[in-house]
Length: 69
Image (tube, rainbow, N blue to C red; front, top):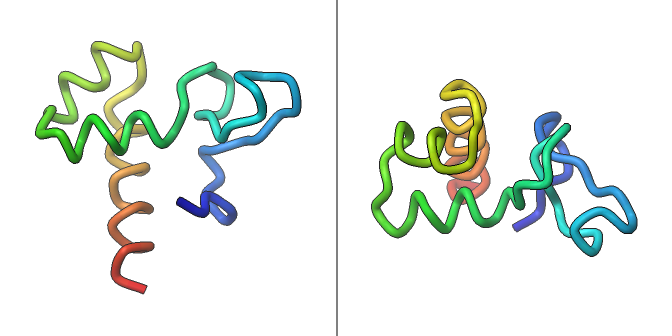
């Protein structure tokens, strides 16, 4: 997925091999989306990855907006 334009995601060379991660974490953004696609709830993902609910919801919204484009 193209995460450019999502302020919650950053790419830092050398951090998690340069994959897009949630800003300030080592959590791959694509893994959060894969978990959503696998049927996990926002609450489960927030708990499992130690993320704020608002972050998971914002990533989901960005992803759904990207799918619609």
